[in-house]
Image (cartoon, rainbow, N blue to C red; front, side):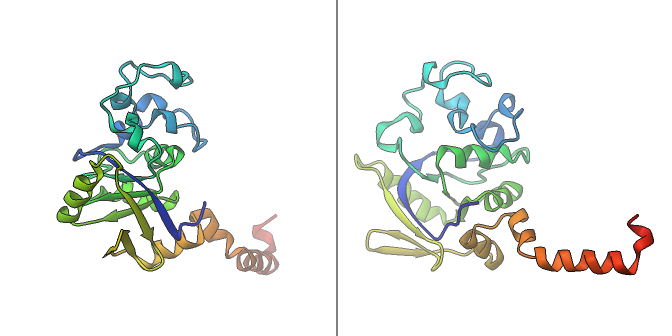
Length: 211
């Protein structure tokens, strides 16, 4: 998992509440567990005008010109801005996989569904809960012809908007994992020496259990 310390990018303003995981990545694309290849189907039913299927060349599909990802000023965005209860619905981990594969590293919203929130951290995405007032401010600013560009400083817990700084809260352990680029497997491997020592001692003390 790639570490995340500071990130600067263009904001993608998805002005919707209660965006569920089926909208983030529809069910027909859940057959793969490779964690990659889902980006072209992110928000598939909103992003395209036709029905998408796994393995289809997305460049040949009819795009919805009114959807935010298809607007030129947001095409290279890496910070997603949404409304309340983002990531609700089923607990599919494919949702953060699709967001990350598209290139999104930060999600800003007033609130998140609990399981989705935890899955983001396990996959290298930083979800930040911000106030409704700040959410509205960012939506307003993102409508300019130049869009909105923010700098997220995870180490110091700031969202930097030009000369303005907005602090945010984050669990200390989740912050540590993102800064170090550690998912559950990476955390376990940090204790590989202790695990190996335990196994060796266990085998020597109870050889009849390991035959």
